Length: 255
Length: 255
Image 1: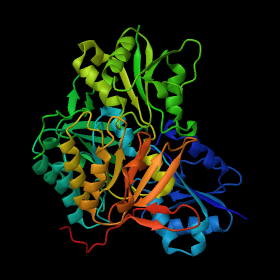
Image 2 (image 1 turned 90 degrees about the vertical axis):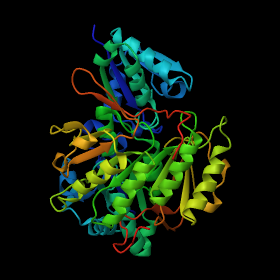
Image 3 (image 1 turned 60 degrees about the vertical axis):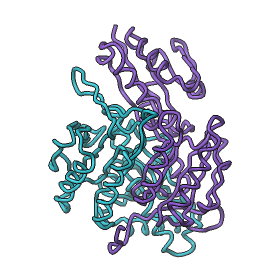
Image 4 (image 1 turned 180 degrees about the vertical axis):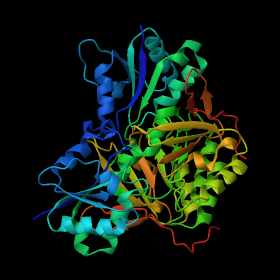
């Protein structure tokens, strides 16, 4: 019996942002595996088993999914956003590499999704309209010093920046330090965007000049974006548009 | 009469990667505006006017779309991928900012899409599974020296990298220089992925160690990805999986 493993991105929350490819994969699945709130987004039906697990058990969850696929089940591992961006895809491949050789020959497929930074950016305009970087601010899986180093180099490169996992109950203080470093390295009033729960009924967007950003503006459901040195605000009735121009003047000289 | 302007991402090519939100916007439109091959992806119907224009006229195209929206039409500007990533959204907001004040009060909405780097990454595994950056390699709108500076800083930050517009007929030589800089700055055999026309019938994927990458492996339909220093290849029958682990050892010390 030939099973399969699909790692699917559910997008940021709204059903209208789930690709037809992912919807079709969910309809064919025998088993759904994932973090509790993401599995809760899949409608129960006859013949479908839902396996919801807690946060921070990504490798165990991946191995369970691979075992079921190896036993002939059609398993979909669900991630929010895009599975390849700070989500389940890397964890599954870590499990494949360290697991039984037979797992390498499974049919494994990653289905992309709308990742949070792109949904958040679209909501306010085009703040990532020029070169940019994406940094996971959690130090659960990397040294804090590496985060600081990347922030400084990203500012020096004048990248717009997208920050995943800015702050959680377990890590209440790191984001304050991130804001200090960014203010020091950027030294201007470029806009910072706090986009919470984008595309869901709880969506809340806040745009502030970097020096006015405060740690408590972010929580674990918040995506944080920062413009580069050229990012513009277009004022208007209601929320402004934020965009980063496509061009840099041709006579601009890098330091 | 109250018009509207939607800037919609069509994803990398396959219909199964177009979000239902974008499909609904196309169904409501009176006018579609965009680069010829993207407008060609929208099915003609009664009541819909298609306005296809050539490449490199993004600002003119944006102004035309805004004029029609201001005149009460329901206009959708189509981009491939995500409109906020090296595509039409920033151009539209540039036109809004420099245009008549009334354009600021138009109903303008950006609908995200699956951008090429995420479709390409999904196709091979999870090469962007850790911190990464996205760089447009075209120097049409920025000085070449800035591209070189960003490449070096991105390598120093140990970002995985996604390169848009690596090479075109008008810019045949820049990508050779990019490869030189990356080899010098990275100094290892991390994998480079050439993903051409992902999700279309012409899809072609090639994975090579960075020192073996050659300029002619890319053209204007190719998305190029580069792992970071920890990126792994999982060999197997058929194409290998490529992934970047989520973790960096906690005793790793940034230089």
